[in-house]
Length: 78
Image (cartoon, rainbow, N blue to C red; front, side, top):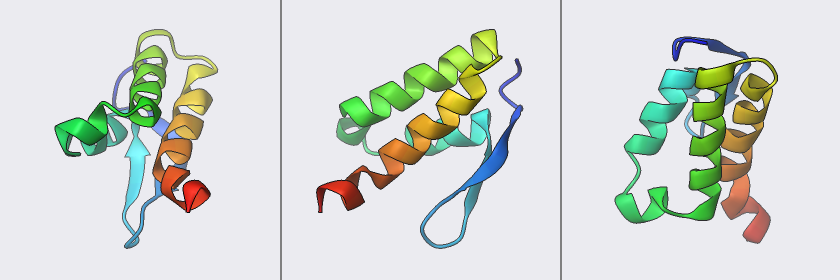
């Protein structure tokens, strides 16, 4: 599955931007500070993105869920 594969539903970010593809989600993570990228929530999201790109199938849904969980972790803890 190419990195340009879109999610079934875009992932909304604070401020109104949206992540529409696997590549956009990966790029978003790569722009985070290195220490934040190493947090388990982001490492899990990265793993799911890679699995989706390499194998496809249901991994696309897992990648979307992984991104949503990582993005919303602060809200759950607060």
